[in-house]
Image 1 (cartoon, helix red, strand yellow):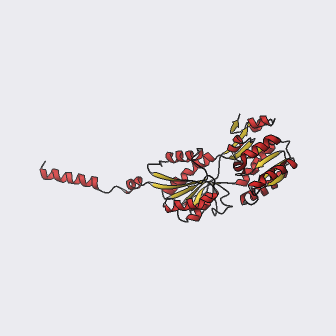
Image 2 (cartoon, helix red, strand yellow):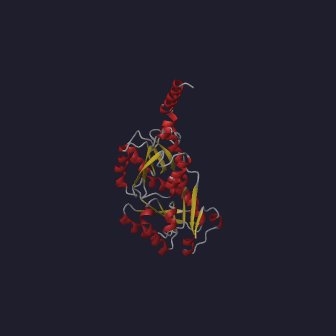
Image 3 (cartoon, rainbow, N blue to C red):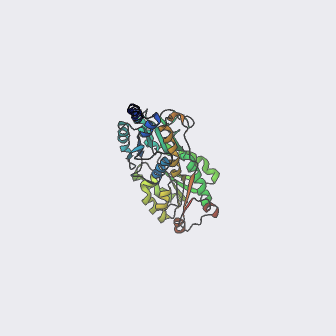
Length: 327
């Protein structure tokens, strides 16, 4: 082969290697930035479930995605600044754990896609315009707060059929609590239950609410929302001293703070399923076109240590349906 021919072939080969990569290869090299706005103080089982699901879809932190974590540690006053900080970082999308985090992100941007991980009552709270077509820049997964508490009352009735008077510890200034209490009042008579409203707006009112529970001789106590997180130790002391079983949607607090039964969506499953929204949006889908998903799995947690301390027997048909039993 002549030297000129060899040189021509070499030049062509080098040209091929130096040519621009196809669009698919260029796209694969991009590292997307994800803002992570959570109510927690650090990563937990739900967050790990989301990352694992993302890896299953080909999105690996440190390779093709970079995550900017912002943990609010349940401090509401930190939300606006942290949401605005993520927007300034020009992240490609924001995932937000709860409704208040979603709202903070919505206040900070109307263009960056926002994915709800486990927002309660997203439609009722105005985060979306419909479940089928959420509109705007928000989609993800949501659950019905009042429906879960209605089911919690049903579990209470099945677990303690002898109880007829139930104390409801709640804050009437929170709109989702108000909707939930009204719905609970509506379904209680059919279950043979009378609800005793135990209202507290500030921490200083907790003791008077618990005193009212004793005076009204409630046979069980339903603790709504984050109140169990904030006052779990005192509620546990009250429950033990007065032999009052506590029901809640918080499985962690039922296990930790002398609760008897918890019923709630399987949040690990909700976070895991949220990965599909991240995948679709990073591939070009618009949040407004992705229907909001609702939980398909629920947890029923029963604390047998508490039952024993309260000298209660859990009916076998209830125990059989438990997803977790604390012994």
